[in-house]
Amino acid sequence: MNSKINTEKIWDQFSDQLKPFILKRVKDREISDDILQDTFIKVHQKIDSLRDVDKIGSWVFSIARNTINDHFRKKPNHEYGEQDFVNESDEGLSPLGFEECLIPFINCLPPIYKEALEITELQGFSQKEYAEMVGISYPGAKSRVQRAKAELKKLFVQCCNPKADAYGNIVQKDEVEGCPC
Image 1 (tube, rainbow, N blue to C red):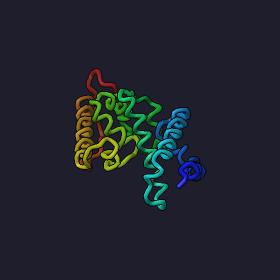
Image 2 (tube, rainbow, N blue to C red):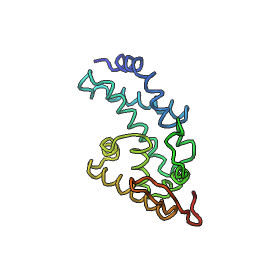
Image 3 (tube, one colour):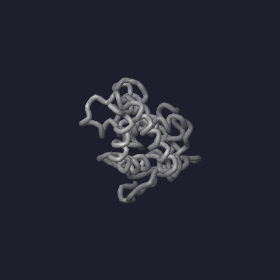
Image 4 (cartoon, rainbow, N blue to C red):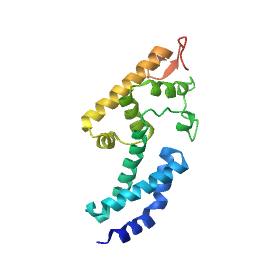
């Protein structure tokens, strides 16, 4: 098996699909180009480990996802800004303005909880994929994400003292002094 020819074929087949996939997650064209290149270096290095040619697409995208996560893992103190939360539509936003609290509260979480929410909620990976990325069990990943969400909820309650209706919809908030909201 000549891995150079196969890597070139894989590039021809998947690079145009991977570019927007990566860019959507990192939101920086130069970084996404670097990640695309790193992805194909790994594809080339691991081509001999591909067992089922019919699953090449999922294999390549899995390598890309892991490369993206490696990028974010190298920058554990990444502070989220407004550009990290681009909404295509404002339809689903809360009329009470809780979105303004989300960024500062995520940045206040301990690093493992911040990472758990970043990967599962903001980057859109499943908890199972997250478990594989960080090398923990699936139940361990689920627990970590649940604890992260619980910590985030505590921050919202301490700051905004939200009131819910009978259906669980937030209908009022009482901001505490010093709240970033």
